[in-house]
Length: 318
Image (cartoon, rainbow, N blue to C red; front, side, top):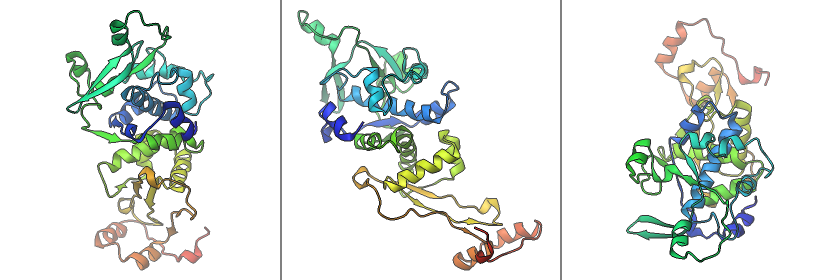
């Protein structure tokens, strides 16, 4: 769904942009044996994000009901798609993981007293106005558990330590980022999930995170070819910046350098008119010529290895 449609659907204002997500969601989704593939992991993350936003800003029933079919459409799927239902149904994967809970009650007003969020719900409204007629029969929503309680212990003790109240170990994803990703089919939920993963790393490493492609694959579940596709799309839309390290033939693995990724703020998003920097492939001889000697330790390592033949890049077949 396009950003303009989402803005109209929710009567969105920039006062409704802020949303924090729990950092543990990446490990929780990845470790779940019930999610079929990385596209479903990405959908699950995006779904939890949207449900958390809908509840936080009282949008479950603004102009119209936010049914499961409507949420699927916002996330770029057909409302008739049943392959996603095992994740989002009552007692489905996301409820089993403790992120959501199906309920017939939902917030219609929000007040903030000294930074504390207090929701006025539909059930409270019906109790206050018992003769009021409504159209809420059989309407169910998802309560974002982690927004209220981060652990099972806090659920049992009814301690409000969730992301609505405490942003410790969270990552901030403005709603504009979500809308932008949903506006482009080439980005959508997988690109949104990947951006959020890198953003949560950037919240820890503000100058950019040094992380290998292998590690990104291991921590997101996204396979190599898919990862390459979506990293390229995020770069093309100026959603991330990447300092690409060269691939050096014959360089010992312990000296390999990971690329540096930095997420950009949503105000800078947009198609780039320049080409994306690709990784250079060079010989060890050329690397040392451009960047200097790699150090005594590496030569000690090399001296214990089979003889290495240094070649000029002009001799490479690619």
